[in-house]
Length: 441
Image 1: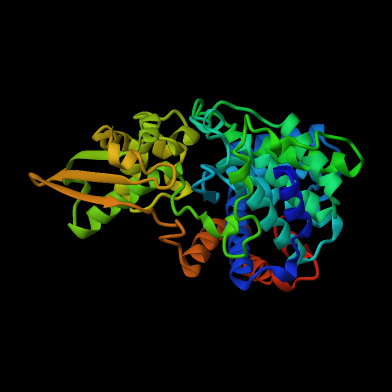
Image 2: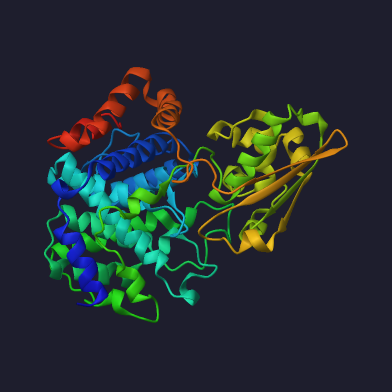
């Protein structure tokens, strides 16, 4: 079979009862994390603008819009919920994909599962398929198609299509057609950071909307190219399907979760400064220099005066200064007030970023950083190989729940937040997902 046919067969044949317990557990963790992030993100200007636009351009429907009482159709809800999921830069990611599958796949699957009345187990199986297709579509790109082209929107729509098609009960012909349609109409931005003060956020919401639209079109017998994943000019087709269906190697198992509300490329350096501050009981006033040796891509994040909160999410000097000042980076620390804080900006100007060839060679499999703090007339140094939240350095269930509650309790209250967490964890046994969606508004 061709690579396209192999991927199609994998998606169509994946059954909930075949998923091992660790995979189901990880998938519910992804849902918990993403929905918590989206509930908080729904109250950002980015998401509010997206919702206002959707209400004027899409017909009302029955599908839940996270954080709102007025429902939309599947496509409109996917757009708004994807915007909310990506707004805070706290959504999950995959290292080899170099991006964020969850914010593409989960909003699309949630909308279609609500429309079809899918069980919780069927919803989770669709997510497993969607993450796998999305990550493979990115990781197996040939060099010209991958190098310096990190935007999740380039490949995330394939995952949204896979999840939506799975929930719509597609046969192989429909799934092939849907993949061809999303690939033909999908986003093709040159990179994720070329306008890091903007609201496009790697075109995540738009590609998710395109992905679910492609599935809905295929459901109406709209024909797309049947061999889209067989284009060797874009994909290493052997790598695209290598190990496909191995229950120990599902892409969702390699998901990382973000403890800090800034670009993942900054997280190793953030971990390093916090470690040094704690280990040597350093005070911010004592710090004279902050030297960061890391991989080349981080040099694109050296912005000493971010213009707004989105730009601050992509500024490593700002991230390190905030971390040193507050010992954390939650959305509250990446706010308009913090962006203008002269104490933070003064500390940020002490950051110097340089490329270390050995660390650079580890990218994209690793996003390492070596940080040296100059203080008290001494140099304090440490290296972080795997930032917190990586599969090799995972957030515990307790830490992931703490993140969820911190993000949601201010929005929906403590009691409702606890009920939502319980409903998400019960998804493997749920008759449908209404117990979850009812608590998102």
